[in-house]
Image (cartoon, rainbow, N blue to C red; front, side):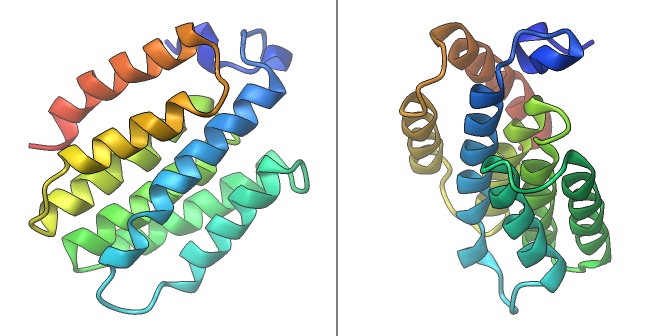
Length: 160
């Protein structure tokens, strides 16, 4: 069951629209960091998902459009034969899925870490950058702590 801090107020949770948008922004920023790892040009579905994520942040598109963009990004991930590109596509798919459920923003961060590791890079600097960005978003400290805790737990399972 999802923590109520990740559930939007209009769905019975504690997450305000402003903080939900901030989490979308953070997840999208994290996912964007993976683009430099792609060996080929970016798949149009991933580009579209990033555009939709930004539009949702600004209140310019629907959750349904974000969900469709997420499904398309995950399809691009499944079709990729390169593990790094797959992880980047998953990061983008999760980032845009934040519109549906805010805890998907963690996937934007975690899958970029996975892509960096798969590409032979060190993830400590990226983790530090992600935390700095998160802490600068103006989110309640309890929510930041919850995100940090969840990132630690999920990182152990996803990034081996």
